[in-house]
Image 1: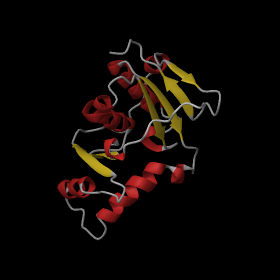
Image 2: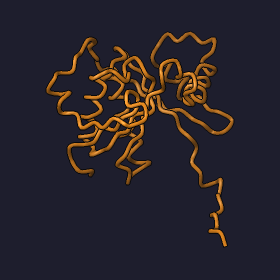
Image 3: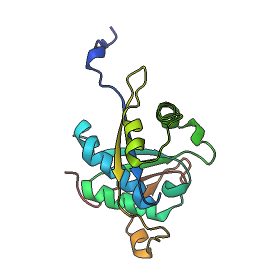
Image 4: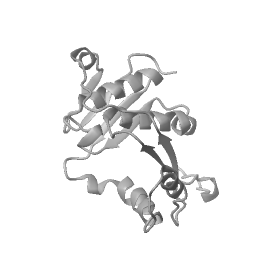
Length: 184
């Protein structure tokens, strides 16, 4: 006989939570990785205490772009800090419109603050934090007041230190970064 499938108890399924970091400085690779680190420290490692592998799906350009060395160097530092293996898959150029987060999370946030003047960070945070869907998607938000300088370049030493493996399928958009140390 086929193996039995355990009954799903809908009461035990936790609601999906979106995490948004609002910055007061610049959208840089350092800010992007700091935002992921903030999520990992505040929630990720508590929700997934035995996980040592993180999957990041990112757009192809901008601060977390596929060709951005500073993004990869900062991810390496993050991986090393927590003993993580980080796999990154980038949406191809022009394909970020298929990003499920854009459709499930950001459209709800935009609808929640529609017609409201976003004149303070507190207003922005309040409207993100009160976003909720009919299927119980909720949002958390943090304010990051740190300064993130622009035009930062990765050094050749930092690039050479990357423990990165490019995947066979679309290696320019898919890669894994390995920690230099064992997981905690």
